[in-house]
Length: 175
Image (cartoon, rainbow, N blue to C red; front, side, top):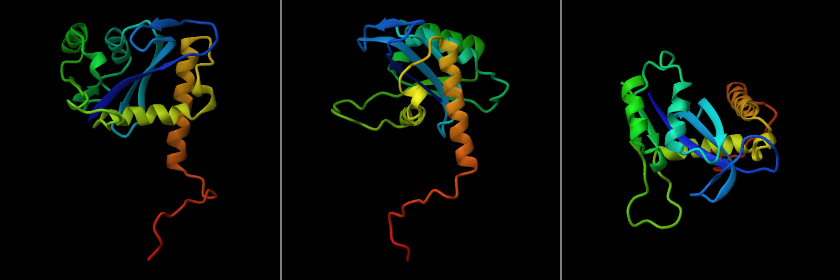
């Protein structure tokens, strides 16, 4: 089993924990998501935007019950998670888990669909379609995390029992 870690920065004019991310030049919060290869949320953590991704990753992964994921072997992440303290934490606390960085191919410009990382970006898009997650309207980070969990549960339930009344568009004519 493999997992994917990524984050998304948000800003909204509400109170609560906020910070400034100098790399993205944004004030607000970060949502750190840990998803499986299907894009289902395994763990979520919301922090100030000032928290470095490599520093937040051990806190996020510490929330994951390793006993619940016995087949977990590899974690894909972007270059911001390349951190020696994270590697040390993984070797001490999750010795069977390997962290692999997914980066852009050299010499590419514009949008490039990166293998494995698009899974968590797609999950961010799914969760962001819910109004309460379009921006961070919550005052507290635990409320924001709960809203993401509720949205994820709704997504899973809709996949398990889709609404039969919703008509799907067939892109190809039936033969």
